[in-house]
Image 1 (cartoon, rainbow, N blue to C red):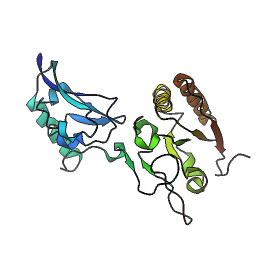
Image 2: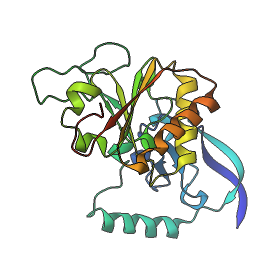
Image 3: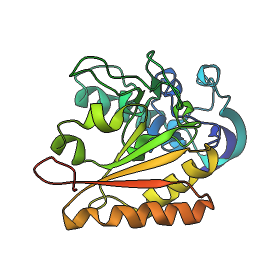
Image 4: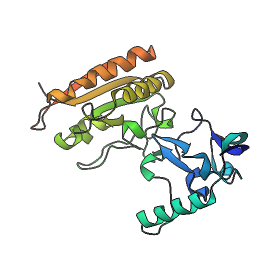
Length: 241
């Protein structure tokens, strides 16, 4: 039954997916989905606003609208399921969806680390999956992007030292994942962040060929003109000459 009552509203434009609001919601009504905080169901939100003060972007506010009545029994049932699934731990936001930049920094793109001795990581940010990276993540500003099929880092032994250094990496699978989601996400990233350049890495296998179409389609949708350099990796791990 729907009634007029107070409930949380989340501004997705402001939300950067930090996840601070998730543990502050005792009812478990908020989750990070595709890099944004979302109220998973009106019946789980009690409308008291305990999560409001934990948002650094002021993306949450309390409004009054028509919504499902708060269902305390449904909340308790859901929290019990979560405890069982997580080994009786308090529900928390998924760390894979919380934006982080690492302290080592050099060059364009906030948080970019540099490779020292062989074997060091060149990764300077988190998350790395394209689906999880918010378009407003601070490490995207003025960055050089490395958009790569997710098989590439496994196949290429010099991925960190030869390709990742100084770039923001985004992992995607052009065969199994949602093309439209990728196109929309990349178009938003391109139009918001003054991207300096793109290195696109794919495997030599046919299913990777769609990556270029995805990037080209996103570029057209964004109206930007960003230089793109493609690297193709053989299944033996070497770059295609």
